[in-house]
Structures are given as structure tokens and as C-alpha cells.
Amino acid sequence: MFSMALLCLSQLVLLVGSVSYGPTFPSPLSKEEEKETIARMMEGDQEAKHSLITHNLRLVAHICKKYAVNGRDLDDLISIGSIGLIKAVNTFDPERGRPIGSYAARCIENEILMSLRQEKKTKGEIGIDEVIGTDKDGNQVRLIDVMGISSDCTEQQAETSMDVQRLKAAIERVLGERERVIIELRFGLVAGRCKTQREIADLLGISRSYVSRIEKKALRLLRDALEE
Figure (cartoon, one colour):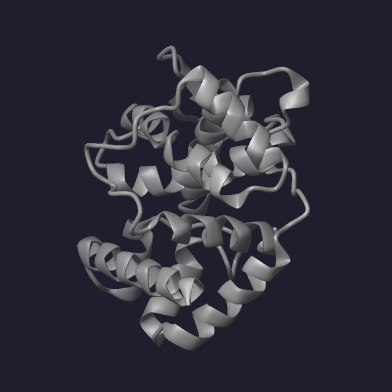
């Protein structure tokens, strides 16, 4: 679990600087471009994997907007959804015959729903029949509905151990103590659970916007370190 968290973080770091997390995301690939990019990824092309992630960020934003209610921060949800997208690309198997878009949507939604479940569980607010969100059709989703979620999206492939080791070293080398703590809490590198920016803000006694600024700065520092 820790290795998968690091692997996802290493790939999320690579998005920083190359993609603007705002109202505009890269356009989706055409069917032919997608097919060719998947083929290259299956041959080990890391640039192709990065391309599949960045060109599916609109899907992340679309799904996250449904959950940005009751004070939930959209940027926070997009970060969580992006982790689901990265897991989807890492575990995608074209031999199973399903489109990457539908598979990614499932993984993105699972990641968000599991995060909401963990958040409510931590606060002691959740029961087996508790409603924790809505599905893509607007139907209420209860905890019992997601407890049997397939592990497809979280299967661990052979990790890129070099990237993981470089990221571990970079976290220790280039991040200050507060930056390191926020990254570790944000991406579940310590307790195995990703915390929201609001939870981290409350824990550290600072504003959510300040947590967001530190997180973005830390990701950029890590990106620069990995590109050296």
C-alpha cells in the first residue's frame, strides 16, 4: 500500500508544471490516438502513460463536480480523483476488452467514495447504511454499496522502483519539515489514509488555502528534483 501510494505520488508530481489544474484541461485523445498511446504504454513507454493521464483529467473534473457539495472543495476532490485516474492507468489491461475511459471513471469514482467513507469514519459519523455520496446517475450511494468494490483499480502492478526510490530521496532532500508533513498526510504515506486539505489545516492549525499553497510548492519542488 505504501509503495502504491509513493508510485501514485511520483506520477502526480510529474503532472505539476505540465498541466494547469484550472477550468481548462488537455483535450481528450481521439480513438486512434488513444489506441496508439495505450499500445506504446503497454510496451513500457512512460511518456505514453503520462499522456493518458493528462488527457483524461477532464474526466476527473467532470466526476468531481458531482461531489463538490456541502462545502467540499473541488480542488481537493480533483487531487483525490487524479490519484484514482493514476491507479486506473497503472492497472489498465486492454486484454480485458473494456475502454480505458469507463475503467478510469470507475476508479476515479471509487477513490472519491472511499475517501469520503474514510473521512466520515474518522469523524465517527458513519454507519453501514450511511449515505456517502451519489453515483453518476444521481442515485444515493451508501457505505454498504462500496464495501464490496472490486480491487481492480487498486491492484499493484510491478512498481517502477527507481521512481519510487528517487521520490523517497527527494522528499527527504528538498522538502522542509512542514512541506514533508503535509505531503505525507495528504497522500497517506504515514497512516495509509489520504487526508483532505481541510483535515490537515485543522490538524496543523492553519488555513486550508495555506495548506493548498504549501502542497503545490512541495509538488513543484519534487518535480524539479526528479527532473535533475
